Length: 99
Image 1: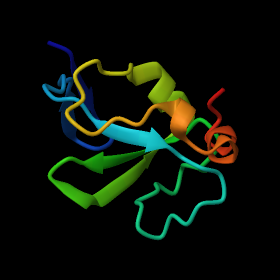
Image 2: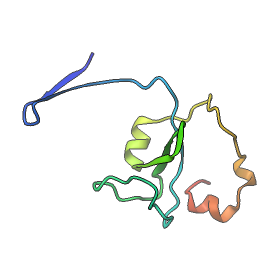
Image 3: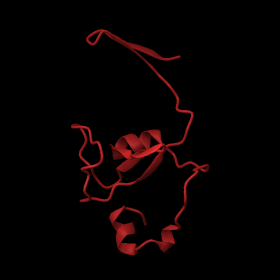
Image 4: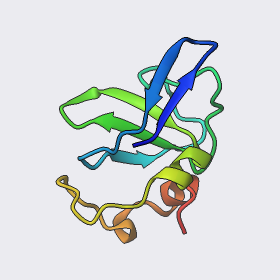
């Protein structure tokens, strides 16, 4: 178990592993993010992701590119509908940074 006590905050932080997969999609540069929570420290960029709560699809947040690449891998057991990337509009695929 990893424990980190932050003296300045006076709080103890512990590491947890998620037991479920996380629904995400690529951020498309320039898209309207008014319904997506974005931390003040984040600047949405190509390679970032939009995550959503599987039980409440209106609950969405931005996941930065660096954090995503460091902490996530694609799940082979996603419960949603899949779309073959070959069926997507090539312009949209290019905006998402997928080749």
